Length: 368
Image (cartoon, rainbow, N blue to C red; front, top):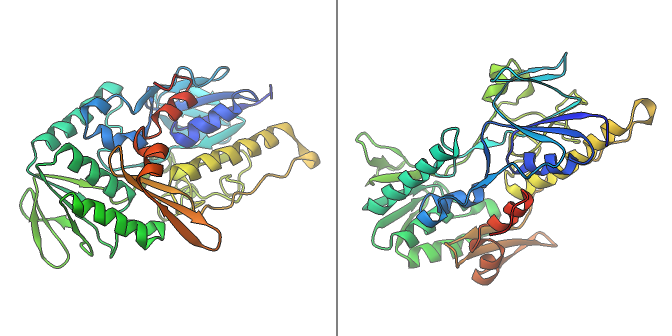
């Protein structure tokens, strides 16, 4: 056991992975405002289908064998005393601090409230709204918008569903026009109206929306899958605004350390290491940071081990489900090209289970 205290603030994908990696080599405290892990990948389906309501919630109690999980909100970081102060008043000493507070996602891919019951009620409310809506508008044609529009269509084959996207093609962030065409073909074959080059904004009247050309659309429910915001307001309020760049992300060096600091790291969606804010990137950063933290705690002075550097992921496999039994998978291949795979691969890799059994195992629970 290394003689070192590691405090990880944020229990999302990156924070959980890193805390588990360090559990046998340091005294780890994972801080999160939620009492459970929120499996966000399952949240879009949970917001539509009642049988998935409980799937995104996995308890933290089996994650760490030696360390502990502190439920609370970090409100202050005292770098002089090397302490994290929680809203409860508890003070946590650290030798290494890790910021892994992730990003805030639009509904329904959000943990609403502070307890599982509150978040569960939010999912049930979305399900009820979708079940009774005559017309649902989804804004945003990236992976989340396409996935959500497909889930809504399959749950409500009788409703009108529209997907509006500001870009010229769906899934353009994948770099594969073919993937975008496959997504559009699936949606349109299932009677989803797809509006491209349509930057939407709320209209003057409740339930109305307008695109940049002035076209008006009415919908009794709308969901905005148009990006995320890093969860760093708490750092600004704590007096550490200088740790952030213009977009609110934590500024890190190649070793994923806060720029200018050896004992503060930031991993996952919260940092500025890469523009690609996806789970595989967060997990890769957690693994690299865990190695660098072990090296830091294990060595001193002139014998200090050199850290490994993070190489931003620009091309990674991307899986976009169209419900539980279809979808598209974009696979980078050598030479800068991409392979686009269809329903069988996508269903096995993600669409059927949304990686819920995998995440349950990561947190020490059975796959079921």
